Image (tube, rainbow, N blue to C red):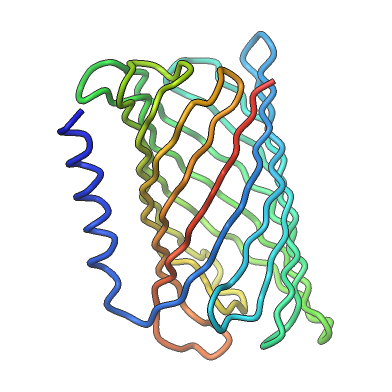
Length: 236
């Protein structure tokens, strides 16, 4: 367990050391409901809220729904539809509809290698449809996302009740048709977190996320966003 805590501390220091550029802060809050009937399919519904902190004057609400099909223990596919609304006093309000498809390649392991728990690599291709108000303009762009994610259980081998676990994620974003107009266009994401299994059907996770972004309204320099994210997960 001491080794895994050392890994977590090293990852957090690495995230903190990357904050050499302009800084801003955000807070995210999510509730994720999952339904996994017998068979290879599972479904998610995820309402959420994001808010700029400090001098930022924007707030975003969103709803995501996903269907996942896992025919093999090492492979799953996902289809997702997200709807976002952003209220921003400094630029424009935005409605965004974001369908995407993804593939996850999973290493089905647990209880070994520092209690590594089901790490995976995923690739997502998403279409971003954005309506800007009050200008009435519309933009549509395609973006690719490559993600590496894993967990380490701390006091049990699997996610049973009472288990603490660490979470790590790294992700890159590539705009395939140029950038949309955004105050914070995502470039890279690094994330570390701590989770707790409250009950077999409920988990609580706290994440610290460092996003490298670019203001494409002004085409200004890249900057870092420090994000504090609380997620509640419930399984039916």
